[in-house]
Image 1 (spheres, rainbow over the protein chains, first blue to last red):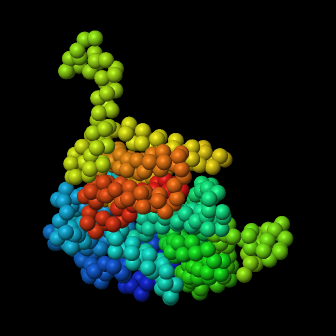
Image 2: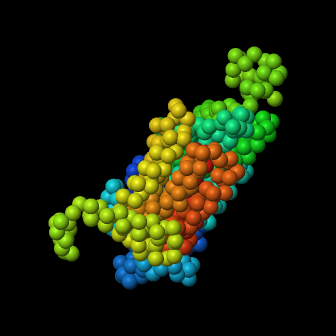
Image 3: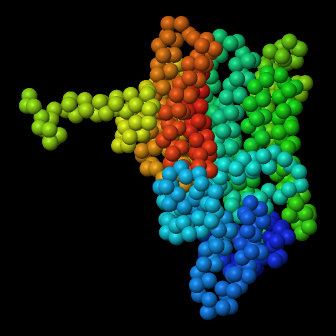
Length: 348
Length: 186
């Protein structure tokens, strides 16, 4: 947490509101969950979307607080009102205060939740081994997750980093990946089932393990390496951002894997191709846009590597998990079955 | 044998102690089978014996019907999915802001596997005589999946704020869906 000095050099959150945001007033109340992701040198105070009162409304108040010593009462109120916009990074500030849970299913309460959470915020410090410590990472609502999931399937010019800037969550990524692992395992087994003799078929449990290794490994190791690279390039990007974008990127593979149950090679290639294109474009444009001006050369290289890895994942899915009925096909055409997977890929 | 005093459980015979525990487990299972609101109260004092038994029964049956090479793997997957899965679902609900006790939730999720265990036993028992077609298995297991999810829905949904209910319930559905799939493909 090194102040806002490096913010100007951080291209990942390029907002217009960035320039008129208040100075680094609140940097010292940095939230604790954020502290484990050490590269947090962005300005948390400015954000534009999904919150009703942007920086403009509380800017005068904060300045007022700084210069005036007489209006103590107002100052004590001001941070609370402004705080409803301030707690987007989560940390100790869970969006829904504890008092709401005890009050039961009061749907009327939830409408003004944004106001409530300012005073309902638990200022208690949690240790890292306590579960509430990590609540900031799961600080999302149903609508928000749905919006992000839809967003991740639309690779049009749009900065995903700006969307998740104030509140990167791990809920979406984790459950997207877990669902994907399961769906791939099921789909792979169904593919085998359709291509094999139905009475002799038995489930291949190994597929679950392999898909878990592939999916979890891909979407954890690659962001980790990228984060390391960006840190080395002195770009202020959090590990959380990378994990978040990679998790959401793979969302489109869930419907794609379900559709890949169709036991037709051509259809499967088209489906996997579309999924790979959409998610790859989403990933590459989002990462390349901020790098475009200052780091053109390195940006191109990095994005090429990202795209290649993503394509590799798609090929792995198609050639390993959805590789169906190629054996029967080989024999019927008369290609030597010994020439293995390259034949499978070139089939149709 | 002396009649046990009602206050002291140290003096009672072992079989009575075991019997009492079995009765508690059976009582909870009964409430899972007939989820009528009282289930939450019945599962208020948690134990992990019931989930362990259900999990072991299911894991052993599924592993015996797996491929020869993958018997150990099948056992491990069932075991890991049930325990790690319920733990992750619980932690997920807690992280979303739900206030529930960890072990109580794990206990509820574990007991609610019961319908799926019944499906496993039925399919296994019938399968030893004549292997069932997948189209017969599917509706049985789908029904049991719905049953399991329904039984545990009330418990989890009530502890999480309204705006996040779906976020907390979806992992539960996925959890039982994974188990149901493991049962179908046995």
